[in-house]
Each structure stands twice: as structure tokens, then as C-alpha cells.
Image (cartoon, rainbow, N blue to C red; front, side, top):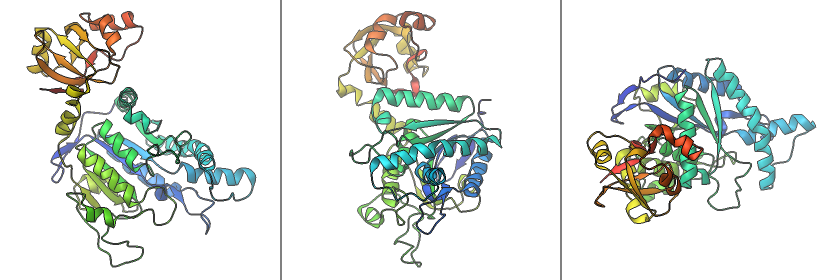
Length: 397
């Protein structure tokens, strides 16, 4: 069943209702320490079950939850250990780590499916690499797929596609899924991003070395001093650490999504965060989502991908009624562009009306311009929706 339209009331520091939340679960929460050298770590069933129960409780209120998960490599180590009867050596090559991720993905998703199934919630696995969210056509495909999963009331479980992501290629991997979770939050315009790990938040100094170190409760701006505080993973198990979490915060907050770093070991941590309790370290959004998206979409003015001209009825629908642009209102197509490009929308006189993310290429639009939405699939042989430019992906000038 689709999720209801109910949303949580606005938390004071967020200043907006909570409809959609991305929750990132760190490696140390999901894979338990088995041996002194950590080479036989499997899924920590008790910890994961507790977190799933909390997510399920929020889901029951009508809130939409997206889970970004780590732990596949750790789960794969246990699978390999059981399969050959001995403890394998620590990873020494990229291929070895990717092999562990491939072994662990099945075990990890089986655990999610079973645990969420106890709450009658369906899960859907989504393996994503960086290029999927930086290349515009694939960005749209990811967004549309995740939106469809949420629409039917399921919970997407997202992980980096470790089997094809290569550490040695700069910019391809995210860093323990922290940056991935921020990019997913941006893609889906989430109202809040929560990074759960073992640490309670960002500390003034490393609390493992200085037990007297105090937590920083709120970071209104990620300054040079804040970046200096951040270090890599203290135990060598995860690939992220506080530095990657700050990078995630920078991306999320500059895109209009507030973020929290908190400990997943804190009892009922998600509900308490939603209720506005001061837990972890808060990173307020630097700007509104609307402003962030408009800034991005307005780059269409200088990108030069192309433009579409629309009739007076479409202009009125866009400017006065806040509607999406349909094929029927298009009178002319200029330039060559692909699905996912940012294009200009102009009236019959060439006056700029808006910029937006197109769901169809210029070739497609030349075939369907002026036609009814019901004719699109038969004319093209494929269908990306009735909206040529959805109102959520449009910035009026």
C-alpha cells in the first residue's frame, strides 16, 4: 500500500514538516566485531533489528524513509570465512574488497528483507554509483525509480555499487556511503538527512583519545576550523570517518537539506530526533531547497542545451497555476538536447519563462510537440511520464 500523506509536524530548528527522511546506517552499527583482528565480522542482528524497528515505526506514521546502508564488505567477510572454513586475510586489493561486497550484498539484503518483513514492509534494493547521480539522465532515472518505490509504500535500501566502483579511480567512490546519502537526499529533496554511526556526533577533539572532549551540538557553518577537527575512521573499519561526514554535510546543507550526525546506539534515537530532542550534532540547511534547486536549474540559461517554445495556454498554466509543462503546449523545439538536460522554456515571442529539467530529448519532443499526453507512448514507443518538464524540476524566471 502507498504511504499516507501524513507528515510529522515541523521541528523548531528545521522550520518545516518532515515528510521524507534519508537515514544512513554506518558499518559499525551493522557488522559486529567477532574476533580480535575483526576478520570474522558478520551482521549484528540485534543492532540492525533495533534500527529497522525504529524506521518501521516512523514509516507507520506515513513518513517516507530511504535507508542508505553500509556493511556489505563486513558481511562478505563472514560469508567467505564460513565457505572455506578459515579466516581470510585482510583485504589487500580492490578486487578482493569488491568480491567481499558481492558476497555480502545478498546476506545484507536478506537480513533487511526479513527484518522489515516482520513489520509488513517491503524493501527494494538500489545499487548506485557516483556517475548515476552526476550524469543527468541517470540522475533522473534514479530519482524516478526511488520515487516509484516510495509511492507504493516500500522502503528503498540504497548502497554504493562496490562491485563496479573502484577506489583507485578518483571521484568514483563516496566514502562509506556518507556522500552517497547526501546525494540521494539532494536527488529526492529530502527534508532531513540522518547519519547514524557509533559516535554521538562531532567532537572538539577525538573522544577515543580524549574522553573529556565535548560534543559540538550545532554547526551553522562548516568552517576551516571545523574541517581541521575532522579525522578519518578511528578504527580502520569503515571507509568514511568524520571527514567524509563533513563533506556530506557540506553537500546536503548547500542543497537545502539539514543533517544530523548521531549515534545509532542511542535508545530510540530516530524518534527522539524527529521529536526535536537535542541529540548528536546538527547541521542546519544553508539555504532553502527551493532556492538551491532554482540556482541549479537557472544554469540552463548558460548551458546552451536548447529551448522549447510554448503557447499562451501553457504560459498561463506555468506562471499562474503552477502546473507542469505538457507536450500539448509545445510549439517549437530549438537545439539538440538529451533527457535530463536543463533547457529554456520560452513563449511565442522568445521571452524566457522558465528553466527546467526535461524528461524527453529534443528528438522526442519534435515528435510529440502539440500532441496530447495520451499519444506520447504510441508516438515514441517509450514513456517517461506525462510531464515534459515537471513543476518540481522547473524554476520560473
